Length: 334
Image 1 (cartoon, one colour):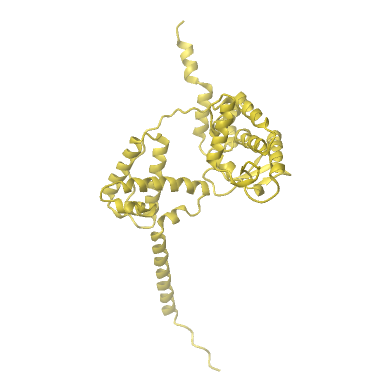
Image 2: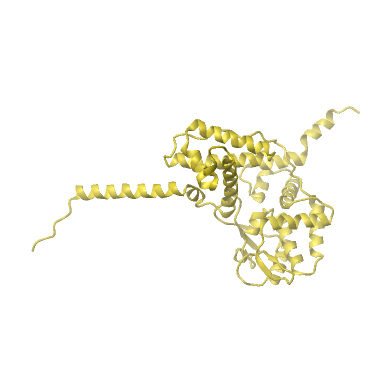
């Protein structure tokens, strides 16, 4: 019997290597053609939405620049322009963009976030071998202080009472939302990303998608929060979909509630009780209250707030304690 001839391993190995290299080149070409899609891949929906807004703002800036107008027809082309020009001109373009942002009187945090969105894309281009440099334009200086007090515990209680004063589905929904924003310090993006399946009614827990996270984490609800959410779910019904949806005049759902709708909801409730606030203000009040209750234990508060950086909690604690004011009072003359 004649055995079949074995393939030439040297030749086969060379062919496999050549095919692998060709496949890698094709893959890289596809990534380069859709650079922003590759950049957004694997990130949370909220993070992608924020990056898209920032890149769209850069596109609008590019479209206004003489000689670059044609690159402003899409965010993809705008960022590819940044990678196509040399290191110096790229930094000059980014510097012009920073100047444009500050001229529009945007908050330093917004300016720095949009610059970071550009630096991140350039870093990906560096990783893929598209450029051998990084974007060197720095951030603008941001004030260290920010108001972290929120409307206060009494203000939150007044808002909850105002929402509960309604006997319809909107009252139940709004009460549950305010309690989540305050009682477990959820961000509005975390609230609106919830589906019914993310609520474990038997255990009284939510699976939330935290800021900058790609996996959900479990948050246990206090008894009053759980009661409010159960009341809303009973009115909402057991159909799958967004946990919080819009309500028309008949009380029927019309789709997922948006972050902007939550902002308006909170702003409206606050105005009804004489308070100017926003969703994040309720979170501020909750974190400040936790620090008051635990004597300034920032590490314990970090478990509650889910901040990644301990320095953020230290800022809350400093503002809560007003150490500068205390020192000034000690040395002030009568």
